[in-house]
Length: 341
Image (cartoon, rainbow, N blue to C red; front, side, top):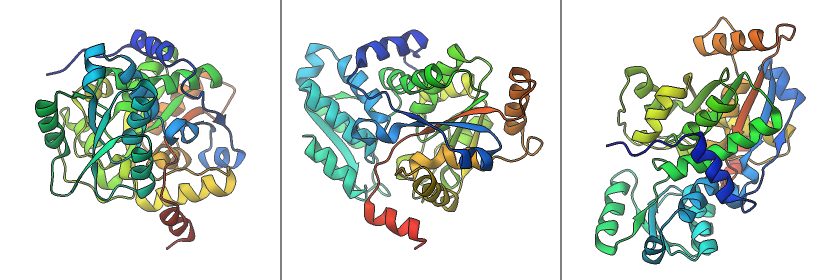
């Protein structure tokens, strides 16, 4: 059963609730990226957010929205890493105990950060065990409040503040490319775009090996897939959320996918040309945006092109926002990917 869907009012409330505790991350430009994309790209760099990803926005908003009783009982979640450490840090700031159900194969940097922020970790095998069932058992036994990584109104609203900042700084956009796992960031950004840039095409990007949302979007209902084998560990979700899917269906223009080699190529580009470290999942949107096809090649590109012509009749290149969602990556793996191993 669906809960209450957040709206632009919830996003503005989240923005006020978060205040200056979250970083207003930079919006970067790259002439080389513009050339490759045939567009003007505006990169919203959430890899510079506290705890290294956009997840801190939703986690802190959800924790600050808890009742006194819920704060005393503590919270639990399940996460491959970014939400885990974001929730752990939010709990540390607010004095709330956090427990996280986390896969054994989560990147070591994410696991270490989660522990250092004071959270308790319950490990599991992502290929054989159900993380949601494990968390549900602890909710029933210990009385914790569940703050899932994406399918939660306060989490979605918090993530949407990322796009609020982008539109405030970059101005009107013809398209917005957003990384996609469970859909919290995409849903929040789509809500922001609907209010601040109604003509903006919002495009979610997920791994080619794990395109559950693309399939769900096409058939009109959420489907479940096996755990995908992809280097984008933050997008190894098996099913889109109910809340996030409802918003995606209503507000998102298209879902695209990119391959692991494309993700690696994008990580290498961002390191070489923009001097920034972005994790594989954080590169999803950039990989799609920088490898856009000609305007007559696929429906979503036509949509972006038509929006650009309407908005800028004398200007050939559309204005496109790109969310770089995080920078938490194991350095040994990162070096190997950049080296082509």
